[in-house]
Length: 109
Image 1 (cartoon, rainbow, N blue to C red):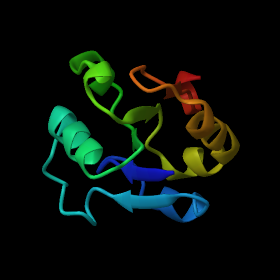
Image 2: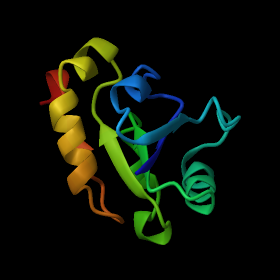
Image 3: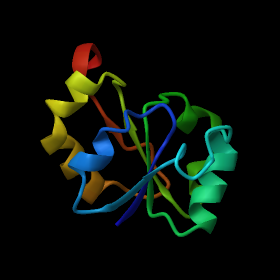
């Protein structure tokens, strides 16, 4: 699966998801792209999924409009994410295109 990590998602996640092709928005020069523009760019460049820690993006965008799946991790803290790689991997495999697909971690869980 081809995955894009949004600029607000810890880049260390890239190394842990080595079974996938993972790039960061910063690596691609897309750090300035926000929400709809990022979804559009990812879809047009063949990404299957965007992983973000932006919990408002699914409220601000019509996700069904974009040909890319959005996975929202509810913590941007790398230590919390690192301790929950299993649930994140499971969510990557079961996420549904056009839906919010949150992964609840940390104090919000």
